[in-house]
Image 1: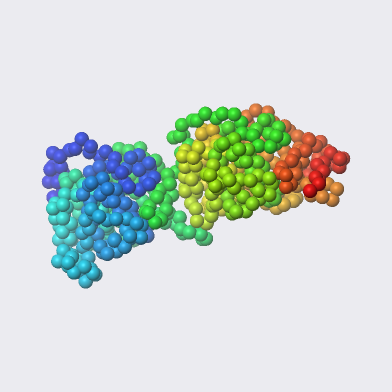
Image 2: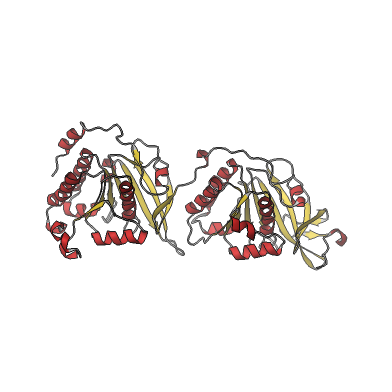
Length: 509
């Protein structure tokens, strides 16, 4: 076994001025979580169950190093060279410049030229297996190393004490040779082994969750990174062609304030209801039953903003892009040209496939890169289905709304009540998070179904406390004068007791 004491004494004379400085992980989003990347010349433990993405994460680490001109080595005890090249090919990776040392049985190799360099780990003592890897490291002097996986070392050790001592020796040897190392562990032991946490400079846990319906959800957590104030908590990630992509958890306090500007206007009558328009840096909740006109009101603000030359992001949970554009066009709001030139960003969201972290990342990207000034989430009911628990939705929406408010963005949230008529309730209470709340209801008068709108809350500035009728037609959205003869509007069963002449009349086609 390698002498740990000797390695520590030797490495004390080889301190680099960049010792433990951050180097890129090669994974989009992970460097942000780690505040720069992995620690240079240190060993990091990447742990997770089989299929969680450890191998892909390790390959991206080495590919980034090879692209920067560094020497890279992949030591594998669990996968063959052929399998690694297959994984790389599926992601579009090139492993040029990366040495692969495989400690697998020769009969598994399809490359006859490599037979004499292969070592069957199960036929050797633990010391011989490790020495095979160390000899290659001494010969090559790599800058980056991935060791896949520690599970084989655990099996050969046949005891936790010997296993810990051997991994500690490996760590010291890597430090002596100034290598930045990822140690992969697939947690195949009966219980999670925490022995390695104390001797590793950094520990990242990768998890794969299987919901009852929909695609798997993946997340990671940086358990430890010495000397670094990491961005804690769980961060969603995906594995797609191109590798691992991490979506850091949105923390609103880390983003700077932006100038807000003048209020956003849409329909003149609705602007009067809310006191002159929707203030920049505020959020507005449109509540009402399905079909009452929430999306139409949101469209009117989007259309007006697009005509002013602003960028708008619309997240669609409940309908397709085609239906959204067709419906808007039928209301005399042609949004197609704006979508074609990119000022209208339409995102059709599948709650069964998209993680909450990726969704917040898309919102942040639209604001930071495309300068979106209005964000519409249609609807929160669909967004709730993407979350595992209601409490998590409220916490994440708090961060998203605070971030958008700091950026001076007008946020419009749509929330459908349960039912169409009668007593109604919402799936989740978001009223206390939003700055303004518009209440939309159906009401009956003269044997006809009509719509009413009122503003029940506005934190910034005055607003009307009246109830107005509004109508949706081929010419768009029209709002009537304030109506006083209403009863029961807040109970969900409004009754109009006034004169029929005060209501909006049908316009001739």
